[in-house]
Length: 167
Image (tube, rainbow, N blue to C red; front, side, top):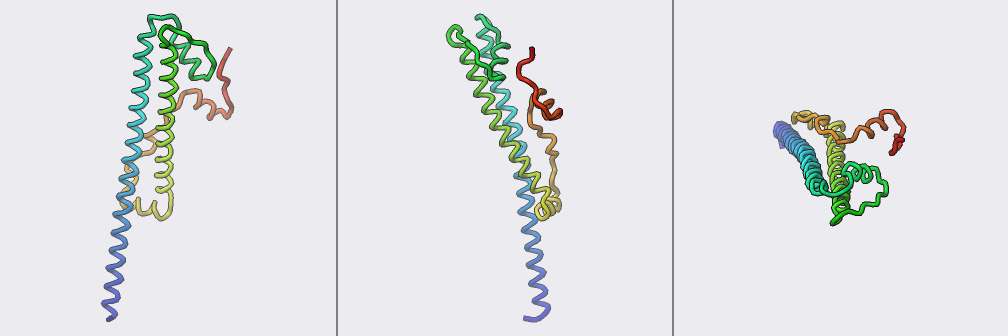
């Protein structure tokens, strides 16, 4: 093989490899961003459905004794409450809250994992370079926050736990 042919083969292989790397990382970046957006939208749906189910059930409970706010307080703060109500509506609401919170927590965990994985890829030398060449990231990860209550934010900001019950 002549020297020109060898150089041409090397150039073709380099162009092919660079093209393949570009396409591979472009696909990866696109899929990662779509997944983050999908998980975020799904978490909004989970939260919306869970809160609506609780609101609907609480509307029925308005006919009965007991305060919905007190029930939510007990459940979210993991306190034992003796809640015996007509037709077990209170118990049903508690179960809805627990199930909804559990499903929402799982959805949030999946979003955290997807964001973390994509952030790690963007920050890595090789993959990060090729994602940059392909034009990624095109989204801001900060636009897909993890939903937390004010107490959690305060605990991590101050570095100490706040008691569940304040007298």
